[in-house]
Image (cartoon, rainbow, N blue to C red; front, side, top):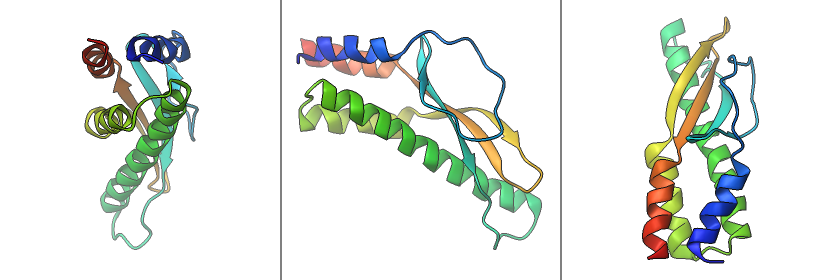
Length: 132
């Protein structure tokens, strides 16, 4: 499949979803017009002393879990598009670089739920260069 067709496949996976309230646990990867979005729970490191240190460790763990979910979602899309390994590598680099925390919900035990968004603009730009 050509990269332009691959972009179409990705955009089909991204149905427009209105802003939703923060959940208390993991949510599925879903699409918005401008981004892929996922919520992931980050559990605190129980060895950390103090609530702020526990929350910081939970944020790191939540972000790692969210990025893994985005990578898995993008992998499905890349497999369906029969993308080359070089393109897959560049797409995964965009996930690592551009996934950003959009919202945070702190829980009483020190855990946090993060909403992480991956803007589609850089992916579109990358696939646009591949098509030319």
